[in-house]
Image 1 (cartoon, rainbow over the protein chains, first blue to last red):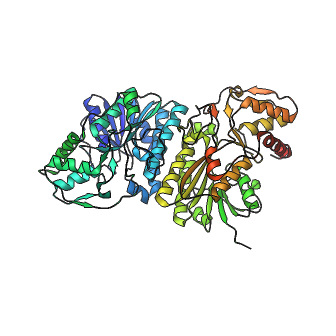
Image 2 (image 1 turned 30 degrees about the vertical axis):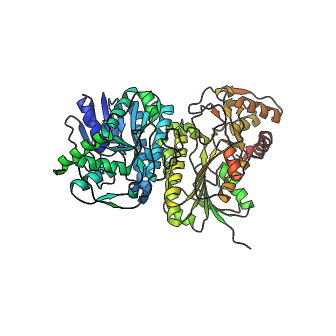
Image 3 (image 1 turned 135 degrees about the vertical axis):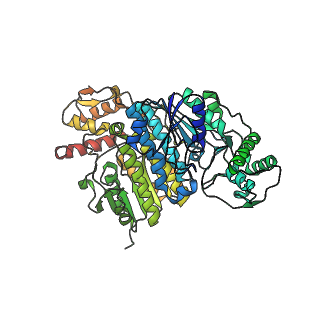
Length: 310
Length: 313
C-alpha cells in the first residue's frame, strides 16, 4: 500500500517508516524536523519531504494515490505546552484539521492517529479503559484529545475511517528526542556517560511502558483491520513502579547507578496503567516484548549511538 | 450602593446570550457584551449592558474587555451544523481556537472563572434513553467536535493554571429571541412558517427524539454555575430531562395555534443524531438547578414572541 507518515522522522515515526519500507510498502514521510532530534532520515526507500502538516497545498500534492495516512506529527512536550498552549493547539489540532481536509479533497479514506494517554488526566481507576473519564490536565493532553473528536466527526460526516491509538509510555531504540524529557532515554544516556541519573517523584510513580516494536505493530494492525472510527489504548497493560524499572536498568547494566531526585514534574499523573483488552479483542494485538528485553535492546542502541561501553 | 459584579458575555447579542444578558442585568450584574454580530443582533442586547463590537479572536480587544471582569460567560460560536459539514475548518477556528485566545487573555489578565455554552452534539446520538455526562462522547459532526474540544482545553487550563471552568452541554434550546436568519433550528423554523401560513418544513418525518429546554431555564443554569463555581473543571447537561418525538412537538404547536398545519417533509438531514435526551441529575444534585418552564408554557411564550416580531424580522 501507499502510505503517508507525518512525523516520520520522530522516534515512533522513524521506526514505523523503517518497518513499512521493509515490508515493501511505499512510504512518503512528511516531517518538519522540529523536534525529533534528527536532521535526516536513514530509511532508504522512503521519500522524505521537509514540510509542515499545516501546509494545505503541499498536502494535496503528497496525498495523491495514498491509501493510508499515519499521523504522528505533533509537538509533544508537556512542560512546553504549559508555556505556550496556543502553539500546541495549532500544531496538534489545527494542522490535523488541515490534514483531514486535504484527505477529504483527495479521497483518502483511512487515518491511523498517534494519540496519547495524556487524554485521561488523573485516572479514576487503573487499569484505565478507553471509555473511562477523561479530564486532560495539560494543554498537550487536551490538544491530543481534541483531534480524536475531529476524527470521529470526519468519519460520520465524510466517511474517513480512523483509528486513534492512545500510547502510554513508549520506549526503545531510535529515540533521539532533544532535549530529553522521557525517563528511559534520559536514564540510559546519563548512565552510559557515567553521570548522576536524574529521577522524578523519587521513583514512586507507576507507569505503563510499552516497547516500540509493539507500537509499530499496533499501527499496522490498525491500518489493516480498523473499521469505522475507533480508539484503543496501546500499553503493556502492566504497571511498573519507576523504582522497579530503575532496578531493571541496573540489572541490565550490571551495576548500581548513582541517582538524584529532581522532585515533582507538573502535568503528570502518579499512577497510569492501560487496560488493553479492547485492542486485543478487536484487532488481535498484544504486546510481545518484555520489559527486561526491551530495556536491554534500548541500552544496546544507545551504546552504539554514543559509542560508549556499559 | 454596593459595587456591582462585572461579567463579560461573549456572543451576548445571540439568542441565548441576549436572554442571559437581560437576566444578568435584572439580577444586578454589570454586564459587558462582546459580539462580532456575525450571527447576533445589536438590538437584542439589553440597554443596561455595555456593548463592544468585536471578535474573541482579536488579540487587542480582549485584554480591554476583560479589565475588572470577575467572570466570563462564553457563548460566542459559529453554530449551524449544516454549514459545519461544508466548511469544517472555520468551525474549529472560531469555536476552538477563538476560545483558546479567550482563555489565554483570561490567564494573562488573571480572570479565573468561565462558564461555557457547550453542546449535546458532544455525544454520539445513539443512546435512546437519557444521556449522562459520563456516557461515551463521539461527536458526529465538526460543529460538535469543535464544541467538545474546547471543554478539554478548559479542563487543561483549570488543572494547569487554576481556572474555574463549568461547561454546560445544552440540548435543544428554544424560546423568545431566536432570530437566526435562514433558521436551521426546528421550533423557530416551524413557528415562522406556521404563523405565515406557509407549509411547515420538517426532517426525518419527525422521527427524532429530542429534549427541548426553555431559554430562560438555560440562562438561569449559567448564572447558577457562575455563582456556585468552585475550583477545577465541571461539566453538566442542560435539558428538560424528557425526550419527545419531533412529530409530537409539531402536534403540540398545532394545538396551541388552533389551526391545522400543512407539513412539508424535507427528508433526511446529514449530521443530525436520532436521539438526544439529557440526564440532568448531576446538575440538580451539585448546584441545585432544575427546569421551571414546561414545554407548553415555553411554546406559548415563543409563539407570542414571533407573533409580535414576525413582521419586523
